[in-house]
Amino acid sequence: MNNVEKEVLELLENNARLTAEEIAVMLNADAAEIKRIIRELEDRKAILGYITLVNWEKVGEEKVSALIEVRITPQRDVGFDAVAERIYRFPEVRSMRLMSGTYDLAVFLEGRSMREISNFVSTKLATIEGVVSTTTHFVLKAYKQDGVIMEDGEEDRRLVISP
Image (tube, rainbow, N blue to C red; front, side, top):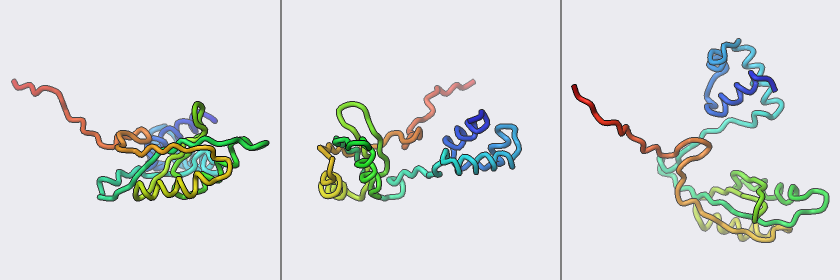
């Protein structure tokens, strides 16, 4: 990867709404070249998608998020991958990571209620062959996600100076 590709990725990672033209101005490059680079990065699966981070509470939607710690028994020749694939294919799974430490997979779920998540864990996740145990942690409040402060209550704390 060259420096221009890396700079394009960093800019898009921080703001997926940037146009190729805006990126070209920022990098002092040709817009057609930036479009080509973005298309190539998408084709190589370096750019996997573009997302919008939504604070659902601000629009009156109730969503429940949970982190599920999952311990699994690795399978011969495929390790954790086969069980992991069975889990990440469920639409309720928003994100999943293989972890070091006391559990193997960190599974992030989103649902409409705690009951919905509990049902998913007990009927779908825990019943998968190779899953040894699960521990569910419900998210009480999100302060920051993907580098974005969810509710920035920061106010100007400077003292007013009058002449």
